[in-house]
Image (cartoon, rainbow, N blue to C red; front, side, top):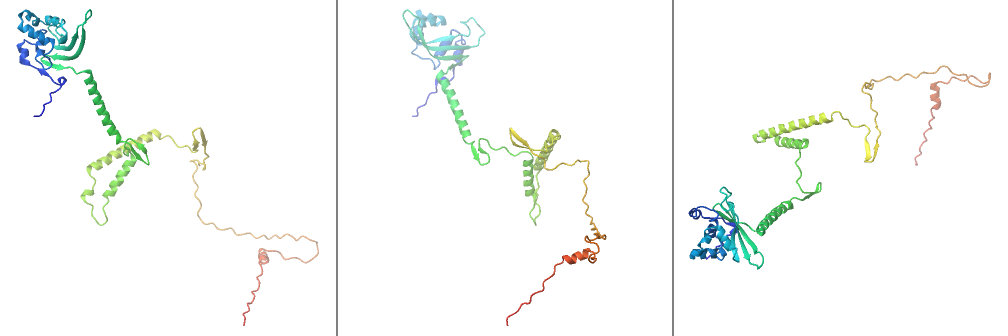
Length: 327
């Protein structure tokens, strides 16, 4: 036969509506007798002893008539007892109250010449007709620590799969963000154009046509691209790049010299004349200076012309030597 494990007392709720109705409701004088019927009550306590004695001894019957007389007799005894720690009706004087009673289980130890030593063991709540047992501090801390450890273990399992290493990005803990803007749109449009291109010699099928959702996405991306381009133009339209660039490192920049001098925009650019031009005819000098020398001596030299210069500058060719062949 299998052993049935009873639930823990701090995990159960007990109530007995017919018993509460027979007692005339939960009041300051009936809250303890109603609690005696619950599984939280111990038959070895001083409360059970006084109740048994008052039931069988008419001289002690007054002890169970009011809560004040009953608890007054409990304070004269030593041992385990159940006392009302909080009375919402303030001993029956307050009609409208919260209806929450607190009963404390405690151990009383008598000390001669001093006050009694009371050790609290547990507390119970009576809310209307329901009775609950308050959890101990150790159980609360244990449950909270268990919740924290469970959450931490889930976080560690999730974080263990995040680190990744790539040569381009190195060690990262989050996946790379998807491409946005012009590059993503160009990539998608290129992929769409490749997929929609029919093979040679085949007809384009209906499946290769872009769907309405694809066209809608392309229109949305085009609108976003136009908007971003307009914003960039409005923001940086009046800025130009400096002709003399800065080179070097921060703290030691050097201004480079511009290689080309910009021409003013007002001067029109001259087109090169591509028409063929005739070479000018060389002029021949006819005035020949008189030869220097003694007057009346020698004969008159012939005038030197460009043709004669060419004849003088021409080198005489040597006669070709005959090659003798052996007989």
